[in-house]
Amino acid sequence: MLKQPSQKYKAFTPVSLPNREWPNRTLSQPPIWCSVDLRDGNQALPVPMNVGQKLELFQTLVRIGFKEIEVGFPSASNTEFTFNRRLIEENRAPADVWLQVLVQAREDLIDRTVESLVGAKRAVIHLYNSTSPAQRRVVFGMSKAEILKVAVRGAQMIKDRLPRLRGTDVRLQYSPESFSATEVEFAREVSEAVMEIWQPTPEQKMILNLPDTVEVAMPNVYADQIEWICRNIKNRESLTISLHTHNDRSTGTAATELGMLAGADRVEGTLFGNGERTGNLDLVTVALNLYMHGIDPGLDLSNLNEIREIYERCTGMTVPARHPYAGELVFTAFSGSHQDAIKKGLAEWNSAKRTHWDVPYLTIDPNDIGRQYREVIRVNGQSGKGGVAYLLESEFGIMLPKEMQREFGPIANDEVDRLGREVSGAELKEMFWREYIDRSSPWQLQGFQTESSNGTVRCQARLLRSGESIVLKGEGNGPLAALVHGFGTIGVPRFEIAYYSEHALGEGEEASAIAYIQVKDREGRARWGAGVDTNIELASVRAVLSALNRI
Ligand code: KIV
Ligand code: ZN
Picture 1 (tube, rainbow, N blue to C red):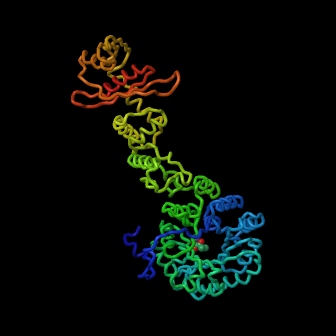
Picture 2: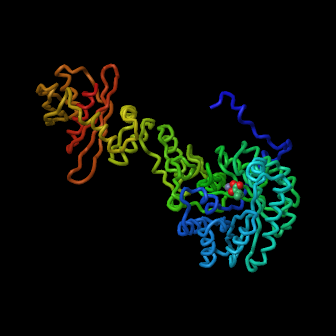
Picture 3: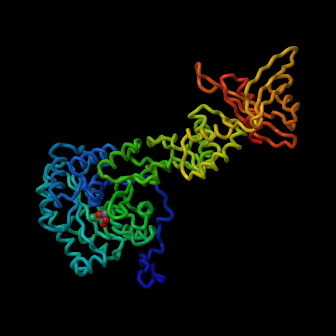
C-alpha cells in the first residue's frame, strides 16, 4: 500500500445540498420492491443459472411477494430469451406481477427485447446507458451531448415499438447507469430528455432508476444525490424514483435506507445481496430492518431457511455464516454473558410481561422468520457456565447445582480453550466425569455398610488411601454424618458437608443416581464432589470421596 494514498486516490466531490431534509425523516412504509436476482444477480454468477434454476427462483420470488421482477436481459442470449418466452407462454407469472427486462439503447437489441415480451400481461422495459465521466471518456469516448443522444435515441426506439405490445400493460424505466458517479446536473439533463420522449404523467408514471452502480462515496452522499434529483427534476410527480445500490464499500444497505429517506419510492436488489463484485443491495436485510422497526415490509420471509436453501441451490452461492438475519450463526451466542442475557430476555418474553420485543442481542424473534433459538447454546472457550450447564442438562439430564456450575464452568472453559475449538455435550460430560466422578486418588471406595438403632446411624467403610486398605467406622444422625465422623477418627482434618443434593439419572432398571456434595474445611474453603451409583446412599458416599479427592 502507498504511504501517501492521496497521490493516487482522491475523495469523491459530494453534491452541495446544505438544506438537506432526509436526516430529519424516518421511514414509515416499505418501498416498492423489485428483485433483480434473475438479471443483475444472474449475470454475476460464475455459472449462470439455467432455465430450470431461473424458473425455480422466479417462483420463489413470486411466493415471497415480489410484484416487480427483472427477469433477464432477453437480447443477450438464447437462454435469456427462452426463459422469458416460457414465463409468458406457460403462463407462469401471476397477473399482478410485472416482468421487467433490461436493454441497451441499440435497435437490434430493443427489437429482440420487445419480441421477448409479446403476450405478457404486465411488462417493464428498462433502458440504460452509462453517464459518468469515466464511462464517457474510457468506454464510449463520447461527449455529454453524445451520451444524451444515445439515451434519447434508445427511448425513442422503445416508444416506436410499443404498438407491438398491444394487450400488454407496459411501463418504462430509464437508468442513467453509474448515476452516483455522474454530475447530478447531467444525470438530471439526460433523465429529463428521456422523459421528454416518454411523456410520463402522474397516472402513467415512468420509473427513474438511479444506480449506485459502483459505490464511490459514503451513503449520506448518495442520499444527497437522491434528494437533489427529487427536488430538482421536472415533473417529479410523474416519476417513480428507484434505487439500485451495489456494495463496493460495504454500505449498500445504508445507502438504500438513506436513499429511501431522501425520497425514493422503489428499491431494486437481490436476495442475500448476490450481484456484481461485492454484490447488489440485499433486499432481505432491508425488508427485515423495516420489520424490526414494526413496519410490514410486504414480503413474506417467514421461512428464511427454505428461501436460503433454494437460493443456494439455484445460484451455487452460499450465504455467509454472519450474514444478517439469514446466516447460520446470527442467532447463535458463543459468549457466556450473551447466552445468559438472551436466556433472561426470552424468559421475560415468554412470561408475556412485555408487548414489544426487547431481548438483548436478538434484534428480532428468530421464530418470526422460521429460525431457531435452539442454535444459541454452543460451548466454546468464550462460553460461560450457563452454556455448559445447559448442555449437560439438556443432553444428559445432569442438573448441576448453581454454585457447582460456578466451579465447573471455568474448569470446562480452560479445557475448551486448550482444545481451541467448540465442544460437544458428550465431550463436556467426559470432562465432568474426569473432574468429579472418576477420581480415585487418594481415596477409593471398596464397600460401605450402615446399621441404625435409636436414631443413630453407624457406618463401616472399606477404603483405599493411596492404595492402602483402611477400614473406617463412624456414627452420626445419618450415613453421611457417620462417614464424616469416621474420617475424623482416622486423623483426616475436620470438614463438614455444606451442601447435598441428588437426582435420578435415566429411567428403568439401568437407572442410577447422581449426588452432588460440597464440603468445607475448617477455614471455610469449599470443594465440590459428585458420585454416581445405582444405590443413592453409595452415590452420596462417592460424592464425599470425590470432594476429598479434589482438595
Ligand atoms: O448497477 C447498475 O447500474 C445496473 C444498471 C443496469 C441498472 O445494474
Ligand atoms: Zn446493478
